[in-house]
View (cartoon, rainbow, N blue to C red):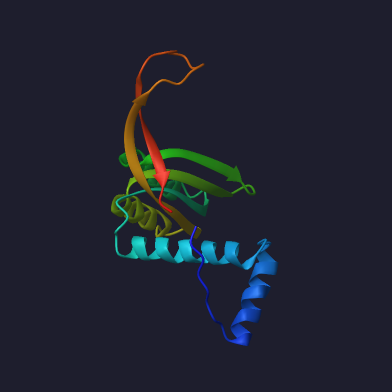
Length: 160
């Protein structure tokens, strides 16, 4: 691990310390690393340098609006190759919070997520995408269904 030193104006240092306390970081280094990773990921995403990602899209919609619920489900089926899982929470008699897990090429995932939360009637949409490297590997997993057999599968390694 490398050590770096930074200088901050007094007021910025105090705001940083307030942020650290508010979010429960153990020290300045931990908080700074987290902020730096967030900024680097933001840059990767905005410049489409991230080729693949894993993402969650959360949104609220009125399930009683038949056309909307049907449109959302249709979009998910049309994009079944990137839609992994959906969880729905019933907030009241009409409104649902839905969280959708996606994986795939960043441009495709990002485009789909933005189209979904832009639908008329979808409220409070939020996308959280994490760039990943995809690696196809074959190795044994002891204690699994196929002991001592090479099983090809995919590893998704979050970028650091």
